[in-house]
Length: 199
Image (cartoon, rainbow, N blue to C red):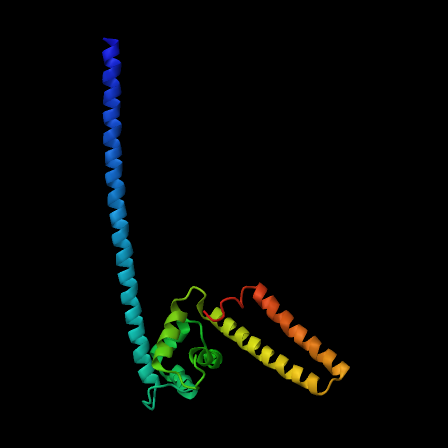
């Protein structure tokens, strides 16, 4: 009977699509579980790698700290860069040479005390070695930040000079210099360098 055949075929197709949907749901669920496991495994692997790298940096710090005082001076950093092969390899990976050591010291010495503490050394060098922006951008940001601070200091001094000696020609020169500094910082900001200086 044709009518019965149509009903039978319809029921059979419904059953087939139902089974296919069930299979797809199982496959999607399995892949979702695997992805979760992969994310967890990746996070665990990253944490282990971070611990290992920070342990290496801790050992490097102890070897560079020649006097055993628990902090590193600029001179100790320079000597370490010359004499410690492991530290030299680390600097090479970050594309830092002897000309960059003064800037590196200024960046790592976040509190500006003139000495680098172990935590500062380990965290800063680990971040530099793993950051997408890499060391060059960190240096540029630090330099621009320093220029910004110096420019603000100069503006303050210039304003005091103008208040004491209200000479129109001097005031005009000072204003022109200040405008040029502002302009330079605006250009750097437009290039995306100044944003995130304090990250």
